[in-house]
Length: 420
Image 1 (tube, helix red, strand yellow):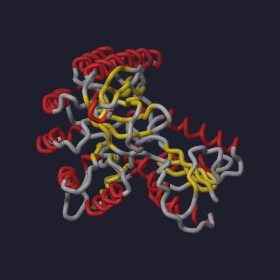
Image 2 (cartoon, one colour; image 1 turned 180 degrees about the horizontal axis):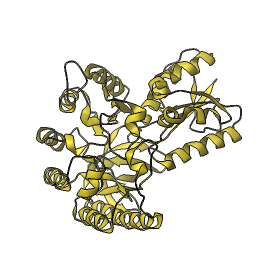
Image 3 (cartoon, rainbow, N blue to C red; image 1 turned 60 degrees about the vertical axis):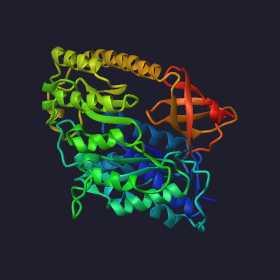
Image 4 (cartoon, rainbow, N blue to C red; image 1 turned 45 degrees about the horizontal axis):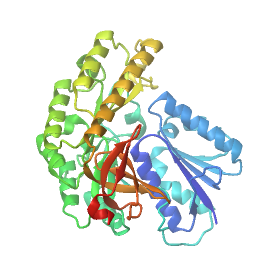
């Protein structure tokens, strides 16, 4: 039997695409393995958002080419879109496809693999929580970002197709689905007639089943009061809101080309915290953007310290080819490193404080992994918990109680009514 492996880099859109590849290839009888050194085919969905992302892709290609020389690698994604000829030169790379052709990846493999059709494996070895891509591309031009040039303009999936996809996944037993896109706030604007993210969520909310929905990154510029109220009040929306801030200094935000202020950020976070006190709120922060002064950094540090954010990911600025900011004077690397470490330390403290506030609370969680001992589950508000004696299989929802903390997550137990 032909075996294939998939490696995704970067965003959840790439993960959603890979999830679909697994389904299609398994349905035709190919065997999925999570070990790229054991695959006859290795499908690589690349990212190019930072220089580190580029480097990770190159290192992976070298490793597979060296340790699994008989494998055929099919490379696609944003790095392949930006520098396909470069990646095609690596030993073992059989084909490089730009983003506009990445849907052809399964068909390309199947033309070479002679397998008969089988039902999709009930084991769901790739993901315990499926991702559904509802939108791709971006219509903006932030001064630091290469994504619009490699993903193109915003393109939305019609609501009916999304509803059918969600229904099929629910029928297969999945009870949490992640809705993802490059820019969810733009969803539906390109459709005829036009649609909106709020309208889509209302339609999905009216569907049958026990499925809860988790949303990937949300741009605060598109969070109007009606959408905020829906997100905050709907029990089928996971209380985790990842907000696209990028910085905490108004001057730097403006230089990034983002027409919004930290006052807008604060208003949105305050609303969500008041309506969903148990919610996780997070963001991504870029440190060392060209021209970032000590004053800019201190403004950001103070903003983050006083915010109700429960986590944030810190990235050092990485110049991307063809973007305006790539030609601006950089901040000294040692200064960037020092600032990044300070914010990472703050993020750890804020996240632990949030997890401590959940001690003794009963929360709904989706089962990610089971074993002979503890199960690994993820709460709606984004806390990974180890719980013994979980009766539910992978992908199902359970009620758990937070009983203790670990370094980055928590220990849990079943509430008494469910422990019997």
